[in-house]
Length: 259
Ligand code: FB9
Image (cartoon, rainbow, N blue to C red; front, side, top):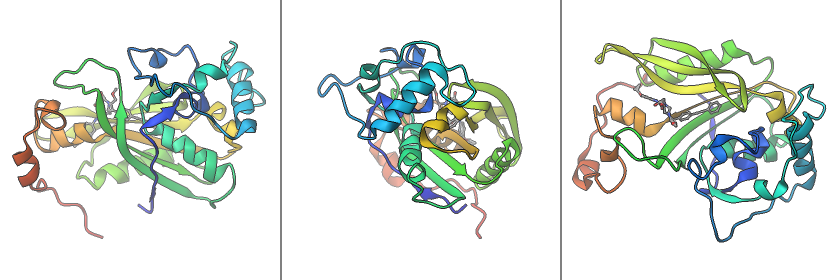
């Protein structure tokens, strides 16, 4: 689909994992029971002081975005805390902060990432403390919710999923936001196969981006669990995984549409 791959660090600064995309400092995702914080070194740095200034403004008052902001004091110390990234959207904002803020790329810009993310969640047959997130984003002229839906349909059709539905949802950094559902023939039911949205002006303003930015994400382990008909996600990653299965697995027989 003409996307370039982007990568980022597993140990991230809260600034890139949350503050830069306008997640408020009292958001539940920040709490210990959702995020792994690093004790040593406890803090990181963001060299772009001007960017930090604008993020503070937009967090507190909305700055000149027309938004009211979160109307609470923004503490830079919280934003400099080191943590294990909870989503690869942190990579997206590093790329927005570097390539787009410094006009190093011309539009349309299409990047994707596939990387490990960490959530301090209870481990069970469906949840792991770490999984691989896939994320794609596009910055371009006149992108709309329809463009996002179009990209998502094209993306999943490459994996043989053609019947797709969109259900409104909430993310602190996107509005509108939509859960993505795919019709799973074998299971005879609609399965939630991802999440998506248009980044908020408050999330884009600090990076000087005036264009709409569309993005979506999913979990590789969920995809693999359905494709390989695996009940317990712990069979896919972690101590319960059988090395023989990993070594001898063959790709499921679903045809990627060859160009
Ligand atoms: O992957 C998910 N489901 C899925 C994906 C593919 C699949 O393959 C089948 C062959 C068709 C089957 C299932 N989900 C996202 C949906 C649910 O499983 C959800 O309950 C769990 N989600 C994870 C996070 O859980 C806390 C999956 C993970 C997830 C959720 C959101 C994003 C990424 C991964 C995102 C995002 C995003 C949104 C807006 C802008 C940028 C990124």
